[in-house]
Each structure stands twice: as structure tokens, then as C-alpha cells.
Image 1 (cartoon, one colour):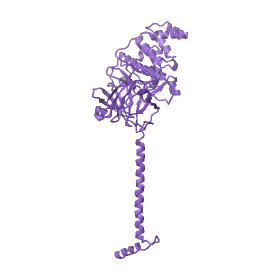
Image 2 (image 1 turned 90 degrees about the horizontal axis):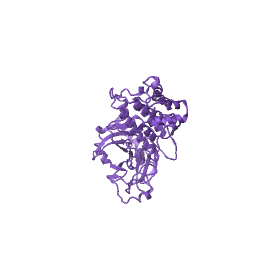
Image 3 (image 1 turned 90 degrees about the vertical axis):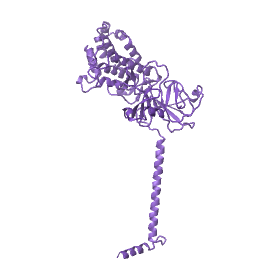
Length: 469
């Protein structure tokens, strides 16, 4: 039976077909072979297409989705060539940590730069270009062939004379270049035990260079790197709101030093640079402190540049709830007065030990600004002090600090003092009292008359009037 079936199948396969008289088994074989060849052809096409798409993607640098604009600043080669003469070629991708080299008019401000490898992008003259992002506000583009170095800061000065190559190890006038090998060695190969923080953009590692300098290396998710000065004592938020026990290690003197140091840092950003830098996210968690409680202004991810020709810029509202100036939140119009408002909130937070907005408190104490104004207006300035303060400040020192804070959070942005004036008020022994009496005389109102007759040891009414303006 099986032999009959096999013979019948052979007969069917051996029958000639209408296709050139070919036998059926030949036609079937040709179809199977053609299908196999077609399948291989389609697979090869898919492979080539995927390879090309990957190659295109590798040529495009990955940039995190952030709400800030990065302006590209091209180097003036004719200018830089007048000052420098030597050439050298880098042997590997280099990474830069760039502090400004100008004499710092206001000490204590943290100066940082974004470090990145050279993207695979050709300049107009055919050289590969290296990009260095300074404070995430500028991007410098230049060929990597010729070595240049100079100093400077700001858009109008300092970026026209910059390093034109990445040396293996270079101590430039305005920065120091690090190789990837150096950073890997300093962090033990980016070991897990060196991790000191992690965020939405990458992981931060603690590193120790060969010269025993401690650094913090932020390895971004897009394979770029940031190198920071390592600050080894956490941030201000941890010391104000963390579990530090019933008695805070932050004495009144330490708190005032932190306030003054932060004010000097902001003064440098607002008045020591051109274009000025608006930080846009001043808050306690962005104030780092070292073992000597020296403050460092950090995290310039939201910073914006404001040229002298503009009184403000309009941008998407960014910041931290409770610290954002009301006029910026409502209009998107940003200038340095927005930082002044945030600084005033920071002073109140440091004095009171309270968060700017705390929904765990009674309804009339949720908003720190409104609560503090009501306390001062009711002549209860002492009641705003952080209960963890072991030694209370003098009434005069407390009222001076409160007066500065209240002026910084004035609803009218034009009436807020500049940061240089804030430093003057914080450091001058009695400047706030004299100036407030002068303001009162100029206004000629009842509040001003009350200010004229105030004694230095009894000025609750004057501060209360300032709080309610």
C-alpha cells in the first residue's frame, strides 16, 4: 500500500507543467530556492538600514531634555592667535573643569563648568570640534588642533581667548584639563563605594586626585561629565530640617556667616559678571557647606544669562515652590530681583528653621512669609527663632536680619535691594536703622514718623510696618 502511494507521488511530481514543460518537482524547487534568496535579501536590507540608523544616532550628541537654551559661542581665531604660538595634538578625549581665573571680587562662590567629550561634528574648516559648556548657559565651540589658553569670564570678555586644544595634563590660566583616565583613577573606576549621590541626570562619585585634592565627578547619563569641588559637609537643608537632635549645631553666628557668604556669592553672579547670571533656584538644598560652615552656591542647572542691554528676560517658569518670586511666577519675566526674593526666603528659613511652605502646620502658619510678617507685625520677633537654637541672638541682630529678609521679599520687585546693598545692610552695624528712618522721612507718612522716633533697642513697630508694605 505504501509502495503504491510513493509511486503515485512520484508520478505526480514527474508530470510536466505548463511552465516551459518543466516537471512539477523542478518548479517547486525553483520556487523554494527563490523564496529563500528573497528572504536573505530582505534580511540584508533590514540589517543595512539598522546599521545606518545607528551610525547616524552615534554622530548626534545626546542632550537631556531641559528647559534652558544653550547659546553657542564661536572662538575668534584671529584674536587668539595673536597671543599664543604652540601647537599640540591630544591623545584622547579630555574633560575640563573650568573655574574663572579673574580675581574673585566676592570670595566663597562655587565656580563650575560642564565637561564633555568632543562630539563627532566637523567645523567649517574640517577639524573636529570640542564643546565645553560653561555653567550650562554657554557652549564654546572650537577646533581641537591648536593649543590656546587665557583667562576670563562672561560672554563679552573671556570667551574670545580660550584653550584651543586638550593637552594631556595642562594647568591653564583659567582652568585645568583632566583626562578620562585621571577621573577613572580618582574614583577607583567609578566604583559603587564612591557613589555619594544620584539624580535624574546621572550619578555623582567622590574622587581623590594624585595631588590629594578631593573632587565630585558627576557622570551624566549621556556620557558627559561634570567635575566639582568636593564639599564634604552636606547641604544647608540637611542641617536645618534633618535629624540633628534637640540642639542644632548651627549657632546664630554660623547662620549669619552662611547668609553673608551666600549673599556674596549672589553678588558675584549679579554684579561681578557680564552678562550677569540669574541663578533661578536659590534654596537651602542648593547651598553646600564645608566643615568650617563656609557656604557654596551650587546647582546652576536652571541659571540664565542677563545682558546689560536687557532689564529682564521672558522664560518658562522654573524653580522650587515656595522660593519663586511672585512676579516671575505670574509673568515669566526674570531678572536678578527674582534671586533676591529667593534669598529673602532663604534668610527666613535659616532664622526660623521652617520650610517655606509646610502643610503640616496650622493654616495660618503654612506660608513662611505670611506667618513671619504677622509675627513681626505683632511685635513677636523673638517668636520666629528656630527652637533648636541654643543661644539666642541679641534683639538688635535679630531685627537687622529680619529687616533684610522682609526687604528682599517685597512684593514690588523694584523696591527689593540689590545683593550688594544686602551685604552692606548685613555687615553695617546700624545701616538698616539709619536708612529706614531716611525712607520714613521721604515718605512723610505715619509709618515714617514712627520710624523717626524709634530707639535702636525697640524697633518692632518699624519692622512690622516694613513687613506689611
